[in-house]
Length: 97
Image 1 (cartoon, helix red, strand yellow):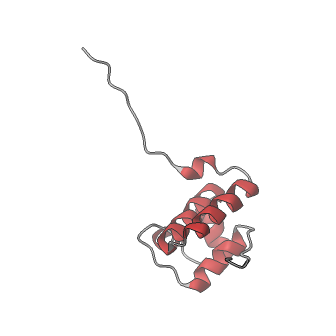
Image 2 (cartoon, one colour):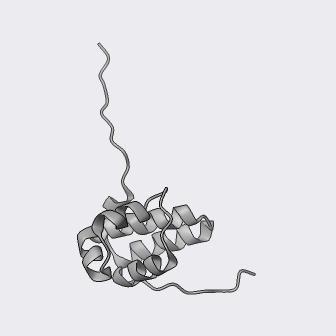
């Protein structure tokens, strides 16, 4: 009888341990230029830090953050900025050329 292998979904939040990890992960998502990927990356980072803590710091509901910061979410820019601040991260701009 063949052995069965149990697998589970890979969760990026389990691998975001330092602020440098989190910043690099967000930077990579931003480089892709896909808004849903950026929102999902912010959600992964927020889960790594603790969604309840991020909700408290931003004054936003935990459930609404889970929804907004998912691949299917479409957070307002104000929400994105609040979450980035609560995560201890900063956005910056550089010339594309």
